[in-house]
Image (cartoon, rainbow, N blue to C red; front, side, top):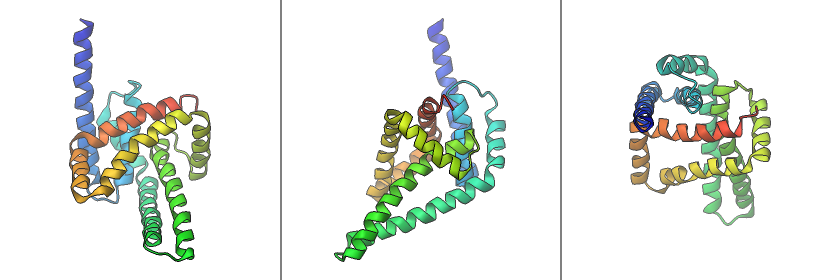
Length: 201
């Protein structure tokens, strides 16, 4: 009997993630709303991992509307800053001049810090509604208190980033997987780690 209940729960969770992924894809179509979609995805998944949510569609659109402006603006800022830093790193790799090398190293450091900040910003916005300053402070706290879980979270994202940058074919694979269930499934796993990291917040 318990085995049958577990199987039913498993298929129920898969259906919920498929539904979540569909909502994410539909609300991300304008592209500028991707930040709000990611935040809404985390808002639901952070509750799902603790079995706290039963009205997925209502919770998703509530979080989407509530975070539409701050999350969308922040996403655009992340993309812009990340592109600029990446461009500087590429220029440094193609140059032998000391100034370009120094600029490239500094840009790489800022790019890594930006990536770490973005990694936590959207789930923190979804769960805690922190300001940027509070988010930065809490990230430092998490890294200091739960370094193991932080490294697991970072390691989870590195292969995805590598596949996106390795070739057009691997990028298309990531995009297709994301359209099917990758976005909701991936953030579900991340939400498990983030809830464990922030359980005392």
